[in-house]
Image 1 (cartoon, one colour):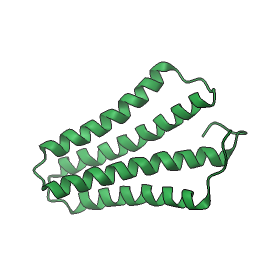
Image 2: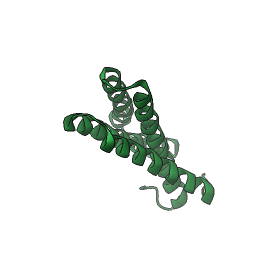
Image 3: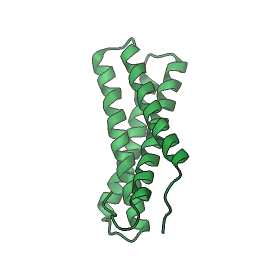
Image 4: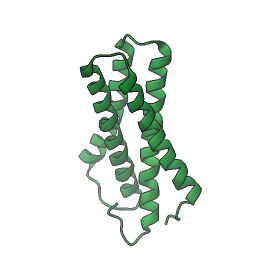
Length: 133
């Protein structure tokens, strides 16, 4: 059903994931905010990455006819959207410059995109003989 992704797309996916994560974490490390605020944003990053990978996997499973319960599928969508909304609410209420808010939003979304693309590439690279990825 699927073909193996090109090496260029695999590399670009990993670069997107690592660049988004690194930019977000380095930005947090250098930010002039309380440690609990940094922890909030870091937790949202981890939650968002996990939720996005879970959503990609459950969507792909459904497309390939692998059973996925409706509750898990719904939780994946809810978790992904919740992570994005929690970041948006946190940034909206943060006392940061607009450029900083934009930086965190864009690096977060880049990391989410990269995580989804890496998961897709991992799944495509496995072929149809092992669909547990």
